Length: 265
Ligand code: T3D
Image (cartoon, rainbow, N blue to C red; front, side, top):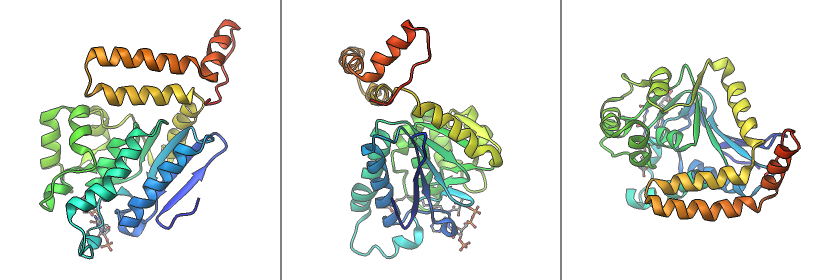
């Protein structure tokens, strides 16, 4: 797959790596980068060879949010239209793709870049990386790309407000704080970052992909559902999972006292 603002690669273990690639602009989002990211996630979703996805940035930054130079040139589009037609489909694609998405936070993640990082399923963060959640308030805007949904669920309401109001470029959320606050799954030195993330992603790619995907769907639903609704959904998806090749292999492997070989089917 070839893009102008992204790198896209799938390795032999079924791990796709999507890399924001505008390093001179700290990987800030242009419309083209938003559309290409949406496309890359759709391709990864359709490709049965892909069983886990890494999202990262090239150079010093993960992503600095909206490219502020681009905003001036958007004469014919309101912010409402822009967020609805550009950002929201990308964010929905990342949150609903039924494969594990691992954010590899290599450097600063600001504004919409922080929102997208926090929309990934698990995050491995460089000791040199940080979140700038007050990037929106710094320029008089409000958080978008699902930050008002994900952040309070990760850190609690009051902490979310504190971070969105006060964690600015001089007062960033460090990797150590992110780990404590449940915003990062693991932290690694920059030299070990990709190896740590690839080890985690390869482990996930070897697991029963369809069961992992259905689990993600249920956990997404659980935030807005009753216990009764979730019990019913669990019953239905347990039936669907039981009909996969991987479930048959998993049960057989247990009975034969060997490691299962899941194929993602
Ligand atoms: O519909 C809509 O569009 C609404 C959607 C809004 C979503 C949003 O994301 S709003 C928030 C937008 N993002 C920001 O406001 C962040 C602005 N950037 C910063 O605060 C800082 O640059 C960082 C905290 C990210 C990094 O600080 P620092 O000191 O490490 O680096 P720097 O020197 O400020 O930036 C390095 C370069 O990247 C610099 O370019 P230069 O001078 O070397 O040529 C800087 O201009 C560029 N850059 C960083 N962020 C952006 C950017 N260029 C364009 N847009 C950016 N967002």
